Image (cartoon, rainbow, N blue to C red; front, side):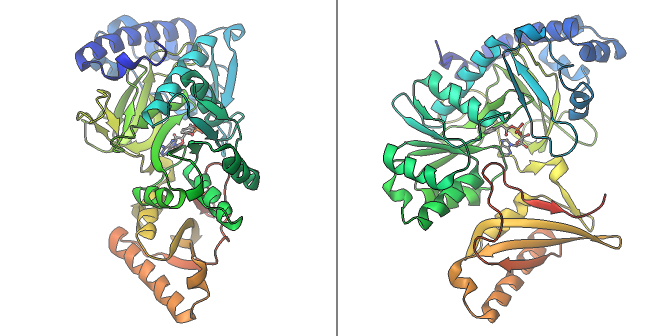
Length: 433
Ligand code: DLL
């Protein structure tokens, strides 16, 4: 059974007993093979045998990105290197990248999870997947690729970049599913327009977008501009890559976490306390089927909440709400906490504002200041200066009203903000912290 469909709709009681057995096996594995985990257990006077229920998981300390960095590059691997068949790494804009490894079985597990994900997002055998996630150390490209093949769909491994050529491929090959970051998807729409073609003429039914936060308003914009149904896919290299959670195309309301492979928790990022369903906090994952690089209570820094309510699609796996940001993306502007996604929602709710923006944070004296650069449509830009000024004022007012912060707003000409082929850069932080 390639897609393990049974697991996705299993009664929770049955699921939980499988999850616990898998957890036990994973704990034994890391205790035996990874010095970092053995030491963590020993320092806390516990052994895997002390974990007698899923509830006991919270007795084990968290693992952080810093722990992975200190064990760079292969110190957290749980198998000898001759069993590792694939290595990926996170981009690591600051400090060392995080390196992750896969055994042949891990690659197969991941492909199975990605096949499931693509199916949940609307793809099936017979679909043609235009895969514009980057191929390389980033897990997006190859993750989708293996899943698409496992599903029996055909995959176009186009990767990111060379955007004009991508439009020609879309026109000539007629792919039915688009996979890309949401920001690159918008860029594809823009370039299509420049070259005089419309997504209306393409055959896309679904777009499976993730790897960066995107608001509901951004979803509407993408669905309208690309003429497809857009679903959200989530994952991170440390946990496996894409294929940790995805929205079902039926509901598009929260992302089902594949709980037969990953145990989710939501914690208070300040105290580490585990929070009940429904409360917002930092997502933490424990992998329970991986061989080469298991993670125990890994703190993702992603902010979300869990929803256990049954879903119309029939899956019994809990849903995580759309990630609203990362704890380390949070801006503190004169004492007020703000996430870029909150600003995005406000901008996208306004007329004539394009879905391209950047936040510039500076420090003047002791105060942080925020400048929002946002593109406006061609028509508005060539309009009277007075109109532009009014619009700027309106954005400033809305930001103040909804978020309680004073920001400067700078409307910029269409296509001035750099486009990304992968994850968009939303924040430019000029503070010397
Ligand atoms: O971004 C894996 C991925 C590839 C997911 C393709 C989806 C599609 P990393 O490069 O390790 O892995 O980055 C992981 O990206 O901790 C989140 O902060 C962010 N992220 C990923 N998916 C989403 C999403 C891949 N759907 C980090 N919404 C994560 C918001 C996301 N943020």
